[in-house]
Each structure stands twice: as C-alpha cells, then as structure tokens.
Length: 256
Image (cartoon, rainbow, N blue to C red; front, top):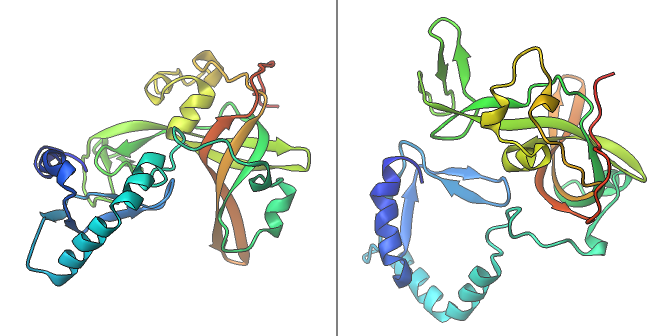
C-alpha cells in the first residue's frame, strides 16, 4: 500500500492482523515480479471483514480448517520469493545458458549459475520512477517536471532506481540480462541516489565499488517481445545469490 492508505487501511489491518481478517480490494495493480503480488493505486479501495457475503463466510471457514497449513506457508515464506528468502537452488534445478532454448515455452523463470560482466560502462545506470507506482516517469522538457503515464498524472514526485544490462556467462554460452533495483545496487555496491550524482564526463567506476564475486546463482525471467518480422527474448534478473565465497579481480570490464 502507498501514501494515505498506509495510515488508514494499512494501520487498521495491522491492528487486527492476529484475527486473520478477510479483505476485499478493488482496482489493485497485479505485479508478477518475484511471484504474484498486489499493489494499491490511487483509485484502490478496501473493505475489511464483511459478514453478509456467502463467499466470505466460506473463505473464513476454509482458513479455520486449514490453519496449520497456512501457518506452515507463512513460516516457510513461500509466498514471498524475494532475494532475501530464496534458498540456494538444488543442482537439478539449475540449467545452462545453452539449455534455455530447450525449456518449455510456458516456463519463463529459471536458475542459472554464471559469471557477470558489465561491458558498457557508459550505459544509463539509473532512471527516474514515480514515487507512487514505482514505474518509469518521463521528463517533460517544457515544464521540467516528470509525468507518470501509469498513474496518468503530471508533475509527479520521483525517486531514482538503479538499472543496467550485463553479460551472463557459463561454460555453454552467454546472454544479456537486465538488473533492476536492489539486485543492481548489490552488484555495484552503491545506491541509485549515489549514481545520479556522477558527472556526465565520468563513468560508473568513479562511484561504484564493483562486486568481486566470480559466480552467482541467478534467477531469471524471460520475456518475448514481438516486433514486425519476429520476436526477441529479453531476460530480467529476479534474484541474485553468491555461489562461491572466493573473491577474484573485478569481472566488470571497460568499453572497447
């Protein structure tokens, strides 16, 4: 939840959370990054603990009957597959880069074990996002303000977010993937707030303390972008786990 909802609805939910409240939410945004999650928008509304709807009573009875099961899910944190709770993948769950092409079309997420190298130190390493929805905000050159087309609002408050592309390499091949947010900051060992202050005549190495870990377990999400005449598969890094404890020389290289 964002903005005033955190002080109104969010506060109410926190107070009655031990009672396992049933909540109806409308006009929510569905986010598939790191699993399925819901995010509030300006038009969102919530109703808590209605009693005159049969489906609510059925859901409440189901939750009572499955109390132990729900508790186990929460304790194991399977509902929150973020980089802070994801465990090191089993060997048989790791695929090679060359093996990605053999995956079923419906499988869009997978683990690889690869090294990471940033080939282009002159690429943009951050962009401005709307503070409400965290989507990209575009600068209006006429007003010098940022507009958010996702919220359909102008002159929005913004916050920088780290983003860059890097090459992932294993013994079978390589691919280009995009790092966002915390994963990107983890690789660079600096924040987006620090990056925005890099002078235009300097590259990222003047601020970033580049990671010296040689290999990572990387959880990727593939997305096929269609265009006239074909399609192109792009990869986003969902989670990043160190796969060795030894440090080596920086695996980030300068432009050639």
